[in-house]
Image: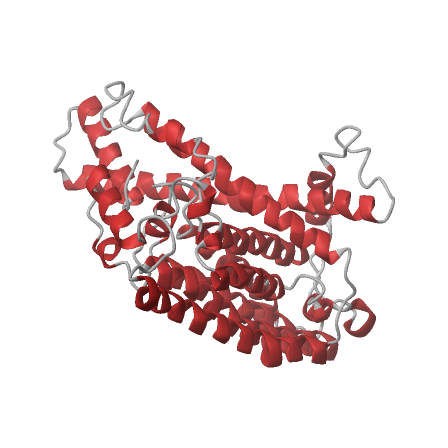
Length: 422
């Protein structure tokens, strides 16, 4: 499954397998429908496994990191000396708790709000490529879609606070709405910088342009992109409600904020969305700035040489391509997990800001900084072209690299040849 349209490729693969096995014509409408439904189920199952499995690990990691920072051991009993099963035990405990709804709450909206927040977070995974060609929905505007989908989480939070019938929950929801909507502005501006460099909104294109050594990563493309990564990571930390920006959950002021009235399973759903969003914004940072599924040491080029090998066992399936994509998925998930570790580290190191400081940081500092970095990133290649007659200091321009790569792989991508301002 190598290419831009991974979901369609999977459907075609299933059509070929079922057609050759059951001796059904490949153009049968029933076969096409069955293959489409099977492809959708496979993608949904894989995404749900990733969406639900990562928070289990992150919650355990947060407890261990917090314990070490506070000179404690953290979980040590459930699941061995390292407490591997502590998160599972907590999940079983939360499921067994009584599902309470306050007397003054709007019953339907109160019950629906956690699922709206979770669906918005899960939607981002649909367009997030895990490796080269491993993506549920391969969209040319994938970067736009993932930013738009993640911003919908605020709707569930507002409804949760509004429907709780509690002024503390309402205050927390209003704080969170103001914070998330405000921080989406510098988040999008910082994300625009690598998108402008690549000349595409397609994550597959952006990842492929950073192949080779780590010096090809957009992080090192120019000084302003380097600074934009740190600005993006700071804004992304605030957008997923992590300390020191977690004012919507300030227990000392709001008794846990917008989810004050929630308990048991519905309470845990909010944190499932939060930890999954932490991975999503970290994976986006890895794709936009840190080379995506490329390791930077060119070990992945050895696996890329296997692509297309091992065919013939099953029609349309290549063992070499699968191994190469599996290695790329491991690299990308590792990069995202390291960034999530930094978010956890920051939470247990820095003190919480006041809500006015959080908003001031965004509106008076991060928005102007992100605008300045975007402007300078635009002027940088123009200046180099004027002075040195080339858009970059060393190496081939990205536009040429995109054309060569699309020619070598036999994949025509219209946006790769455009390249944008390099």
